Image (cartoon, rainbow, N blue to C red):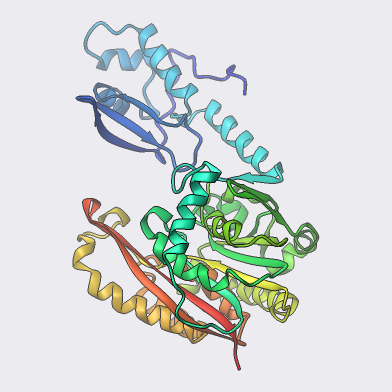
Length: 415
């Protein structure tokens, strides 16, 4: 990436600090810093500034020039000093600048063109070292005893919450499928970031990820032939073949982590992310409702009766409390959220997508159920399955007065 378009004018307005950054005050070794967290992974990682830079950052609002800043800054800072500071911010992709826009587009384009997705959760949500990871999972699965006998599993709805928080619940969900040997896995997972690209996904909520997955315990290959065939039907099925929304996504690879550990047979994957489907909350028979039918019905016809195909649906349940925009602490909402979740899980286990949608519409997704889009889409095309609830749990992030709930359902063909 050329540095030629780094901001350099003393008279033009300085591009504003990116509004999608989270700037977090932290302390380390007795010093105070501002830590920049970038969900979109454009900015230089692990970047922090001394807290004294805060007032200057607040002045960089897209209207003031270097000359204007000099009028607001006390002390001995020169225009040259200010320019060096602004260019430091720009080089590290903290400003909404021409340089940043070029960097972002190049990053997205390169990701779309790549045919391998490298795990972004390794080293943060679980050990990146293969031996350490295998030991971690060995211990978790060895301590779990499956007491319930399940019919031949056909699909699993399971969380994608951080394994450090819920490894026991992951084990309970995935242990029942450890001995099956499907040749293909069709995956439907929450898309947390497709809303950042409305021009790509508004009318194509089913994002096809045309990539192999490079994970610490080995590579998992995509079903290239099936993906190529589905790509040709994108207009008919509401499928998006631009997969840039997956670049920083965790909802697929966390499930694949467990398959890479449990299965040693050859299998391929057809991975989809599913966008928000928010229109369904307002009109059942609108465009999103039509797209769900167009996508899920052929999916069932092609793969639903195939004994060599298994389905994985990745989604958590409620996200509530102050971190997620609620005025009250999550701890005051536990009872009402639990009541809602149990209804959602019951509808999911009885394969009642109409009941799920009615419930979601009644509350207008008040609890931000991120598993709704993939699970509703899946069940809308799979009427011959019945489910059994495996578990339900809650992560109480008390220090941020917030919480996330999650659970698992295992599906088999109705008798």
